[in-house]
Length: 155
Image (cartoon, rainbow, N blue to C red):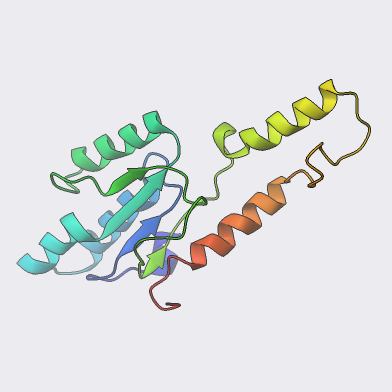
């Protein structure tokens, strides 16, 4: 995916569901290997190019360590722990690279709602709240729409 997007030196890249940082590392490697960077560009690449957010605390720690072991970042981590879908983005970026979150935590409210529904022996697909249960496709759509809010060009 990074080779298709072809990020350039000086661009900022964000992954709102970064996991262990695969897209971020691939971006760093792509820019490092495809451009003859001067000292300032190398500094920007190391400290100001890749950013991400991860919902699962332990996975976020793995990502930070992964980036650190590859020489990315400084004293402040480029990775935040939290849910990207909860609030409007504080920052905006040139490129968004992500795999939608399909992990257990990403769908746990759905699973919990379905379990509650089964336990109450209701035959309807509408929980007690009156709202339809989210599906994987609505989670994907929500994530895709939210990713657009992180884009610099759209602001």
